[in-house]
Length: 219
Figure 1 (cartoon, one colour):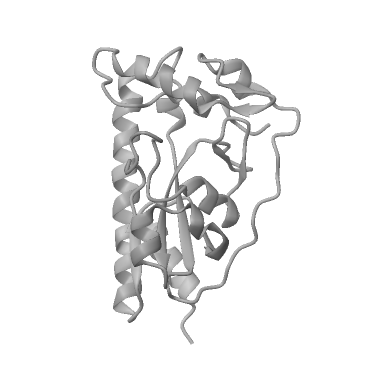
Figure 2: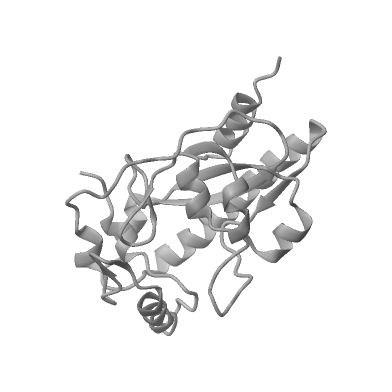
């Protein structure tokens, strides 16, 4: 019998994917965008894939996002989108249903949310824990990974959710220029206000920061 987890993971790795995990999503469906809830209710599995960001590019971020980071961010999103499309296509070729969810597509501009939370999916797939900054923190790569998701009805072996935590680390709190991260957690409003400020930097023009991402390195 074909090992579909291994089959799909090999496809992902050929696309440069760093992390791969699977989970069931029944308990998360209420959090999905209406477009998914109304049309894709039969899909009960999620595949989470993660692409490690370049440490060299992150080093160019100081007190604001750099032009290199902007390009890298967009390139990684594109690479992730290509990877999940190829995974979804492979599943479809096996006679099952699969839908690739883009790495970074805003569908609710007021709430600044996508079709689903790649972070919540990733946590349930064992990729890491949700840190103080609201990002997904991997035990090896910290928050320096971007994610995308495939939803499917293909039965796959699931991974265990991550149960790690940030411990005594306060790097993101110290680094955040907006004061949006504290012991109490993540203040999205403060974060988005600072990101809007960054969009006005010449050559940036998109909603990125990267400062807490750069700071979040395990150990």
